[in-house]
Length: 143
Image (tube, one colour):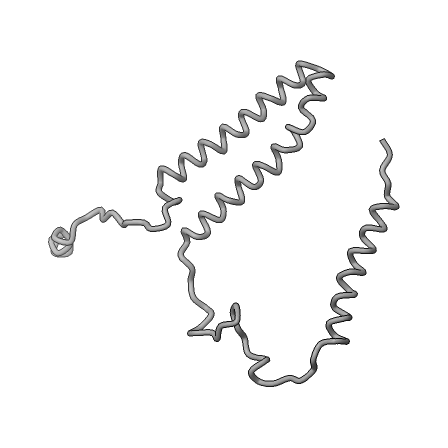
């Protein structure tokens, strides 16, 4: 099984050349009339409102982490699925081992998803359930 390193090298050179060519063409052809308004920071064509340093709600991070976990699941599962037929032809024992390892891997991820779902971390709008009522608070402070 030979690798065509020449093709990979040509592809890498073309990719780097394409990027550098685009940057060079932009510098040569683009307008060079700076102004204060052009130098100001903008977001999607809108003027900024308020300060940029504020905290995001942590649930966005949790949803992003769950998404990344399932993306990694696909990235790690696809190669096994792609060669599974060759494994079954070569050695049925190896195929069964790979099959059960893949099932265990997916089962761990499903348990993790169920746990996150049960905790309510996939809900965009969370309702806070108070552990104590407001009427109990003054009594606890007096004690």
